[in-house]
Image 1 (spheres, rainbow, N blue to C red):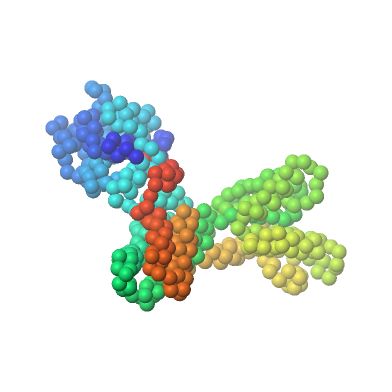
Image 2: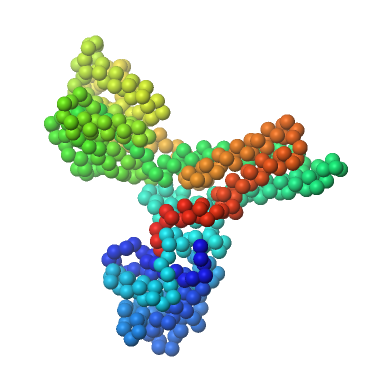
Length: 470
């Protein structure tokens, strides 16, 4: 983590575009850029200019002009990284981008590591660690919900809540530590009733944050939905109807889908990743058998399972004992038994081939049945409403803090465990020195979230997932 040198990287996406932005950060960033910048006003020096100003000119490699550029100057500490920063807007030619970067690499800069600009912002106190991680989440956000959660975290909503808990706990910890210095005089500086009240409040907040991870993880990563059923019941047609495009091959021939097909759509701000699987049946086809094996793997990975069957094949079979309907009921029960924690939606396709009375009769046998026609796009909206109803977005709508990061979730669980130990210790009347041990551990896990406690390995793991240039 050498912060003494000046780093450079492409800040915009790689490839050809209208413009590209190349970012420099470090104590000598402005001075290095100035040595190769020729303003359209010949006398203008970048070093002498005010922070947060724009300057038009040419970037020069000796006497050769590389490009006409617009240079933005941000002087420490009023910059994203907390140190002198220069952003050069150039034309988006890959050749020009590389020429400019190579120019600075030859003249006092080194290539930035992944996430190093944000790492420097954290080390310089511009962001805490949870806010820094939210930057990566914001860049990766691909839905309204994930964007909203990342923005709230980057603005400090989550870290402010943790910081307040930590400060309150730290104040009481200081009083308990003070009691240890006067152990022989048997005095209490920390009001035990107030401390019990604080512990109960911390437990409540931690439990709420931990519970929010179930929704937060879904918002951040999307919801995998496996579409399963026998061959030729309309699984691929349903996928195409949901995506509103011909993503999967549709054929009257059974077993058309040999491999899984995946695609993602946003429904009410939440990403759903639909997986069209191979039809489940007994077959001698080696390739199709591999596809069926993958179907069960995808069910394991999915959070929601859509079981699809053909209504036209069972509409006359409600009262019969040995028939296709019996097979379908057996398969539904099998999925429920094998995957009891999965949300299961049972759908009868080809509803346009069955009468209302016949459908009502079927619902007496399969009460949870949702009837649709994927080909005619009947009932698709009802299905999407049912999918979104599975996700509790109330916390999101109320702008509550939602945990999306598994590292934060793990630290919260460990902090709650230590707080519970403190609570138990107080109920047992343990001495202050024993309570202090568990309080220090809780403070440690709070600090892991916001960055008061860090290690090189921890920071390396976090920022390695960032893109270079951010």
